[in-house]
Length: 288
Image (cartoon, rainbow, N blue to C red; front, side, top):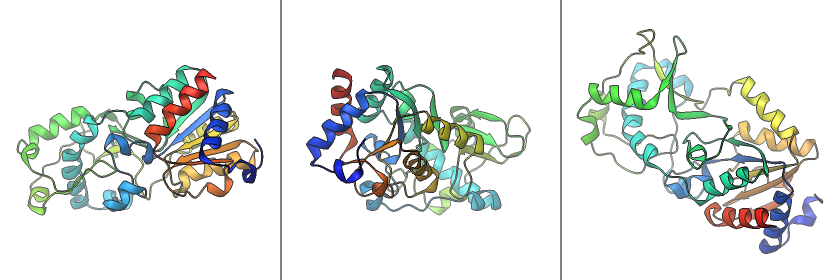
């Protein structure tokens, strides 16, 4: 790719240039919450996130307080229904099409909603884990979220009838009134009988497992283009891959609604909804 200044041409020209780059293959996708907003899951810092600001629970708060865990699971149990019912949008489908066409070297997602896989993408690295799994912080056993959901329904048969207020949040919870939270009953780990149980996701204040980071770095260095989709790159866990690509002379393209932290390092920038841009890019890249 040429220098960034030479590639910041009008949107149509940039889109055609990016389609040609993608058609050459070796593309590593790094996706963020902006890819899932059109599936009804808001982001933290993009257009939907600004409409309904959310303060996520930190790892330190979750592990340090039984009341915080009760609040988290009461809200997350109610919000899980909406996450589970979310469907892949045209952007997710376009990524899967590019992978099936053999143009992708890999897919890394910062999202925890599983929508890449639901669209048919394979070997997705979930940088921040997945809400569809649960981990015991005592014995480290991994279990299925649907299994936990059934157990929580049995322990809280009235929970599904409680009305939530406001939209589902990016981490999968919803607002509940304090009396509903205070009456919510938790369940223990089936493997060790203890716990606490936590969704198998990386909370704010928690580190991404180093072996997962190493796999992502290896993918970056084996690729010829890093394609960032729907991420502001505000969080260092994703931005570091953009920095690594730029340092290695690997092309960086960013498609997002609004500015991102990685813009100064990008060779191509497209601003717009991914559900419209990605299918057009995929069609041109695969067809051309």
